Amino acid sequence: DVKVTQSSRYLVKRTGEKVFLECVQDMDHENMFWYRQDPGLGLRLIYFSYDVKMKEKGDIPEGYSVSREKKERFSLILESASTNQTSMYLCASLPRGGTDTQYFGPGTRLTVL
Amino acid sequence: QKEVEQNSGPLSVPEGAIASLNCTYSDRGSQSFFWYRQYSGKSPELIMSIYSNGDKEDGRFTAQLNKASQYVSLLIRDSQPSDSATYLCAVTVSGGYNKLIFGAGTRLAVHP
Image (cartoon, rainbow over all chains, first blue to last red):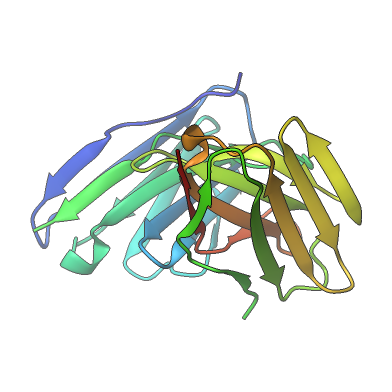
């Protein structure tokens, strides 16, 4: 079974802090994705990566950056956290060329005070 | 802007009934369609995928796809209280990388 893990289930940070969310997958997948999920808005794509050191902006990249130094690890960075970044963050992975769907991690619920 | 639309619900059905969940999408180039179930506080879990027009059955679940109408649906037969969750419709974005667009989800409540 594909396993996608995220570094924290719950995280509380203060406005202005730099926040790192880590995602690790154990299936050698090329594609990895970061989403945020808010009530009534569904999942929105922040960034995705299709290979090591490669990244593409999703629909809502403002205020976020990402890092993919190793194939199994995809990090989401909030350079200066703001209260409107309080959300559930979900990581997903998928093999290159796969017609299958994305496998999700358990999610990190981030609260910015 | 490519979109996926779902009725937010809640859709309330009695135990044992058929629950019908609907989804429309705007990207005519979408090739793959998925239904996820998400329990409160948990991550989405894939329950059905469908790639061609028609019906696809898996146990109590049937997915239906009509590309001409840009419409996907999920039927849950013999609904159980454990089916109570939010159901997310997702479609692939034409252009590669297997990017998905998600609907906001329909909340299903199955009452005994």
